[in-house]
Image (cartoon, rainbow, N blue to C red; front, side, top):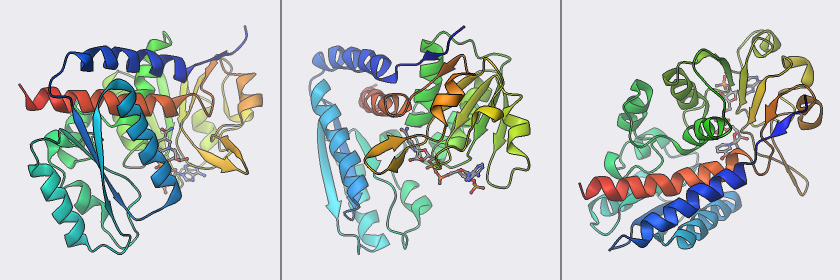
Length: 279
Ligand code: NDP
C-alpha cells in the first residue's frame, strides 16, 4: 500500500472558508492585534501573512510595531494598551522577541481571554488539563490534521520529537488528551531511533533537516513534519521526506502540511476570542 500525502493546504482552506462564512454574520468584525518588536525579516513575513489571512476572511487586523531596542517596560506598556482596548479581540506577540527580553514575562502579560496563541500560562495549563478554549495553534492544527485524515488517536503510541513551549510540549498534552500513549523526546534523549521506531504516530518539531530518517520509522507509521527549515531557496521540514514516505502510511509535506493549519487555527482562535468576549 502506498503512502498518502496529507494535504494541509486543502484542510486549512476548508477551515478558512467556514471562518469566512461565520465572520460574514458578525458586526462589529473581530479584530486581531499583532505586536511586532524589531524587524527580523522572518517575523515581518509571518506577520504579513497573518494580516493577509485576516483580510481573506473579513477579520480586521492591526500591527503595533516597536523597535528592537525597546525595553521590557515599553513592550509591557504596549500590551497593556492592547489589553484595555475594547476594539481589540485578540492579541498575538510575534516571536521570537529580542534576546534581551524575557519572553515568559511578556507572554504572561497578555490578557488570557485575548491570548490568541494560547501561550499564557493559564491557557497552557487549561490546554494541558483538557479544558482549554484557546489551544496553541500549531499543536491544535496537528491534532485537527490527524483527525481530518481519518486517523483514530485513542490508544496509539505517539512520539513527539521536540519539547518547546510553543510546539512539542503542548502537542504532547493535546495527544495525551486524545488518549494517545505519548513519548516526548528532546536533545538529551538517548537513542532517539529506539523511541521513534515503536511509534504509530511521529510528530517532529526540532528545526533540523533530516532529524527523522527512514531507518527510524516503523512501516505504516503516520509522520507529521512540523519543522520549517530554509535550504537555499527551498523550504524543507525535519523529515527526510522521500525515503520516509516509502515506509510511512501517511505523511505531511513541507510546505503545505502543518504550516497552513497553524494559520487556519489562528483565525479560528481569533473568532473564539471574539465570541468569548461577547458571551
Ligand atoms: P525550538 O528550537 O524551540 O525547540 C526545538 C526542540 O527540538 C527542543 O525541544 C530541542 O530539545 C529539540 N531537539 C533539538 N535537537 C534535537 C535532536 N537532535 N533530537 C531530538 N530533539 C532535538 O523550536 P520550535 O519548537 O519553536 O520549532 C521547531 C520547528 O518547528 C522549527 O523548524 C520551527 O520553524 C517549526 N515551526 C513550525 C510551525 C508551523 O506552523 N509549521 C510553527 C512553529 C514552529 P531541548 O529542549 O533539549 O533543547
